[in-house]
Image (cartoon, rainbow, N blue to C red):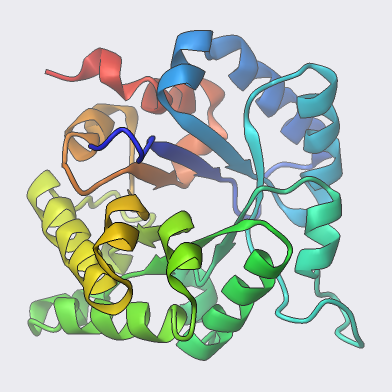
Length: 261
């Protein structure tokens, strides 16, 4: 991949770990990673909201070069939205990346492309990088609608954003049928959709934005398949779910290059 697209490996902890477990996990991860790992790959971890401050404290106190990420944000900076967390709040915790539009948010909580767009704008407004998730269901894939579905999500989720914003963000391709199922898209599948997403960005925001935007693959990423997925020229990282909960497994994914054939 081009030098300007340093791989980003992100660990989405979802609704796992209390704050004691989160502290232990980030400390163990730091022991497993080396300066060479950090030089080769950007790493982010995305704890639950209740764990953000604890993880931030450990990262800062121990000078661990792992970026702090959040799993979601509300589009508004403040207001009467019980139970919600704003991008403004996250920014004060030194959050660098915010996942928006994860398939679980879309499927379980009814988030639309318009909602995802508003959340991405909120993250950008507070100088954080959105990780915008897109991906098709198994039924859509079997019906030959995968490319069109992803195109619609890219267009809707990124609507109205300018070229610099899109160039600097991350788009995560998540084939929904491969999330938490043990099924994984092949390298060919990941590359085909990664190239498709990059072509969509080129059409909408120009060749320079397409060359700079980072495209992650997410969906049952494990140490055993990370190197094959990362070998794809249009895959610039991974959004890792279950495997990121084990610091040793996540570290092996981060240093996937050691296992490349």
